[in-house]
Length: 417
Image (tube, helix red, strand yellow):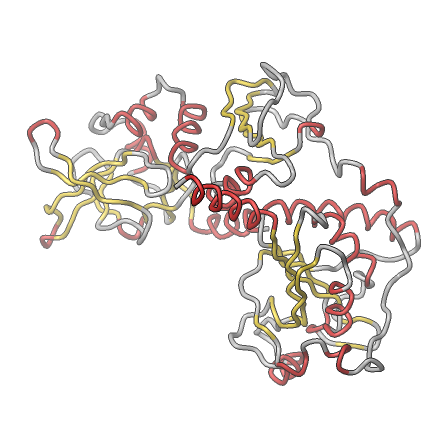
């Protein structure tokens, strides 16, 4: 058993070092060849990404260059790399230097939206580094007389592998088409050793996650929690050396360390991995306060008083959605709300996949409890007494926040950037 656990730990450690990112820098033949030569890159595969239509082919991508109303795919390369041998920062510095990211929908004589510069990231840390290195390279380009970087930076939706004849094209055809679109502008050699940016307090309540390179528990926390975080409190990641202006209760002695900060001062921390439910319970205590009515409802299964002040505020809102005040997930829609006269918010249904139903036999009653799937917060109960024999989700208002419908799309888009 010990051998099995050791092998499993080793496997997880190795997996945590392997990352995937998809990059577009013009014709994918040359981009693929470039990244295959870098030490630490495990594979580079030509393909298509970033478009709206499924199952792209070389012919369909070329055809969509002139079609309006549909976002075309870009010629890209899926790069898998071992970040213990080549860091994400070094990889992306190489990407910026490889081409001219200011040209919009072309690279040199290759004209079309399929040749646009693009970074499609798969982790929040890749996104952070992509934005930081972009800003640094923009400064260098501007000094050299170049314009604004037009590179698309977005989360990867799906990568489509290109046709077989495109793979390793320049290995098969050594004298094939491979233009050099590099600007000649280079990052300073010393800058790769510097931290990309210092982290200073934002003011108010925030969460700062301290990470370290090749920390498999940091990677697990990213994958399980921060990659899906949509809460209203800011959450940022950093290395210990990046912190500036924070007042901590003690030195950082392990990673990940999750710091709960208010006005730059540490209120409490958790050292080591936290699963999703544990994190959101800690976040609930921090955001709401353990003595608050909302925390009592969420984690002590308390109940709002009938016609409470927050109920009166939420019972007659305009069109929109109700989100979990802790996780930020959308739980209920005003289109499903109705006035039950009970004094609690009532809905015909929850947003699919947002809640969990649990049997509740407390207080000598047989009921179905409604719990927020992500945060684990108690929301209320469901009964079979709505008009027409439908179900009634009887929900406590203190654990919800209201977001107008026109703002929810903008909120989600901003969080996905």
